[in-house]
Amino acid sequence: MLPSSLKNLIDQLSKLPGLGQRSATRLAFYLISQPTNDLNALAQAIKDLPVKIKYCPRCFNLTSDSSLCAICANKNRQQNLICVVEDILDIIPIERTRQFNGVYHVLGGLISPIDGLTPDKLRIKELVGRIKQLLAQKIQPEIILALNPTTEGDTTALYLEKLLKPLNFKLTKLNRGLSTGSDLEYADETTLINALKYRH
Ligand SMILES: [Zn+2]
Image 1: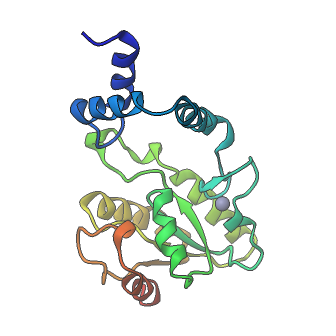
Image 2 (image 1 turned 45 degrees about the vertical axis):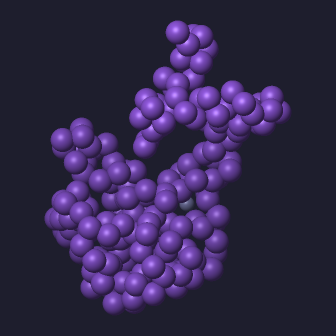
């Protein structure tokens, strides 16, 4: 039988996405063979996460302290052009294109009732708040929905379109040069640049 500390590590690792019991066991045995310094550094990096990583209070991107993230704080970026994405990882490929000069709003998931993800679990209220704040300042927002072309992505887009329509402002979607089922995260740069340019 395995020592309880090792069993505990395997249990924790197998909670990670993509790691089943078997690969978690293999990874745990790999870790056993590593130098103490490396193990301490890994443990510390994980321990630091809840303390050092914060979310931007405006867009929910990552930030290093409790103030606005680097994108929201950048005065050269159009604060009224808001690209709505599912999660933080979706920001990276769009930023890489250097073609987007607006800001983001991270929903924190997509509507999927089967998984318990109802609209109230996502940062939709906060998005509506941002839009209303712009409108109150007589600034016309443009919202670009950059959600993945999956059933959940389409459901969420449809929900947002219905919800936001009465507010009467420009709402566009990324052009589906992004083929159905393909993830924003893996879209190549040219495809993304075109998707942004020909949004509709
Ligand atoms: Zn931000």
